[in-house]
Amino acid sequence: QVQLVESGGGLVQAGGSLRLACAASGIIVSSNAMYWYRQAPGKRREFVAIISRAGSTDYRDSVKGRFTISRDNAKNTVYLEMNSLKPEDTAVYYCYTEPFWGQGTQVTVSS
Figure 1 (cartoon, one colour):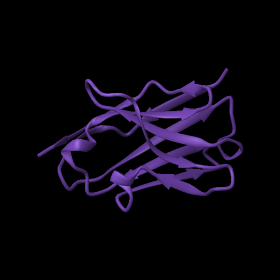
Figure 2 (cartoon, rainbow, N blue to C red):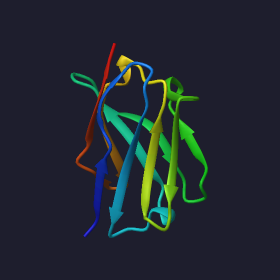
Figure 3 (cartoon, one colour):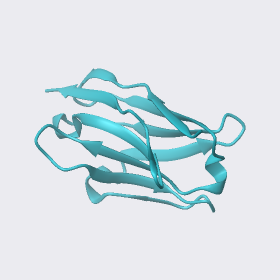
Figure 4 (tube, rainbow, N blue to C red):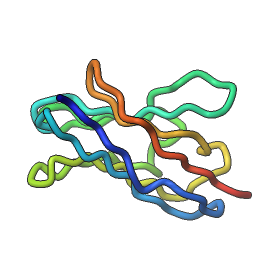
């Protein structure tokens, strides 16, 4: 049974930082492309970042230079380091690897 469990969300002021974690079980994160998505109220779920099996990364334009996706193979966990947070980053953040989704973690950035 595959489980993706996100943690690390919370309330932070604009300009602050958070680190999200996605602990995986039932899969090996280094053998799968792992994604972070987010969904703000009233909006569609959108791509945020990907780390490929080879370890290459990519980001949506609005978070480039502020967010970093990484993984710890020993912990079988994927991270999303978020710096210089903006109110528009407020959303529920989801971990994803096809076809599995985590339950999400809320990130709220106050102005």
